[in-house]
Image (cartoon, rainbow, N blue to C red; front, side, top):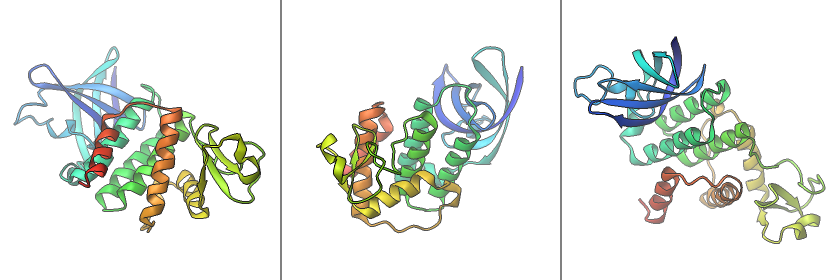
Length: 248
């Protein structure tokens, strides 16, 4: 059967002497794997449509789990992302997160639009770390891992100093802090930003100025939560952490 989808290449791997297998995250079908014959050849007309982060219209034939590309038209090559180490690192993280956390052939038009907007934001020089935080939260929400950020997970209070409990899956008020001695005290600004990033559509993200110490606090909270509840070992995240460690 023949299918036409609008998709973003979230994974690309060599297959045989001259071919590639790409994983598309598509609006219509979710994740689909497609063979692109001849994509490794220098003069191939399909070499560009098989590159990571490329967004396009893809026409393929499929009789089993793996499709074969018949035709493709690029909508946005995102070449500026691939040419920038830092942008490519964040885009790779979002792509790998999507590939690992979303099921095959499970359409999710909202998440597709969020990934599309995230890549556009990277290309437009918006804050890479903020885009990464927002997209990660969108993935958590769609996959059923979203922490409770609106009220205390124990008593539902919204009053007083709040702490973030990775173990209990959300925030704790001052009265309930003994339920998790490892819960981390949050500033009101950090709490407000976490809720904002969870709720905001990435397509609406404008210029945003977040203090470095606030971004560092958000990063630590989100990584602890991810490690506690999801725990997938991602090469792209390890690479980001190495870049941060050595100040690349």
